[in-house]
Length: 207
Image (cartoon, rainbow, N blue to C red):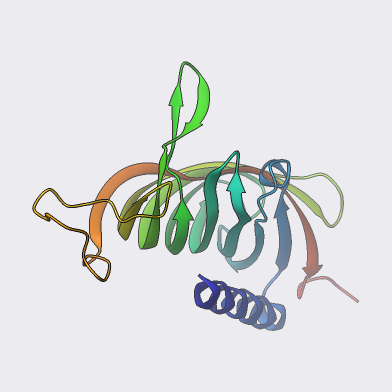
């Protein structure tokens, strides 16, 4: 988890620094995630009059929420294609990312968010699509609303809430070391938010 976070931060900063040199750049923070204590900064820079590339990280630093595990980190890169011009109006995006987690799986029941009474530790990757809308409301400020869905593949070990390894039916006794990672793949929402962004660089602005 710590290694993934360090790599993600390094990539985010490197991308941001590189973008300053050659493209109009916005730094953003997802306000919707911030309301529930999840940190989601992003950097978006221009590739062409109608396309951009965004890098972002999503970090939930909470080891436990209501006695359920809620620790995860996601690093993602996304190509965006705008219908009008970059950072204005509707866009479609394609993204790819990697994740590390120590998490009780969430689910919806009777319109309420709940968590499984078990948790998993592992890694995974995702590839997905996103739709969103950006609105520039001041010279340097932008609002970005979006929703994304992805195909996620994860490799993990499962545990009961007392920390014991979930047993494979073929095992009669608990192994000395965790089993080789289990694997699963599923469609899942990978991003939703309302971010506010600030333009930190504009190479086309006349001095």
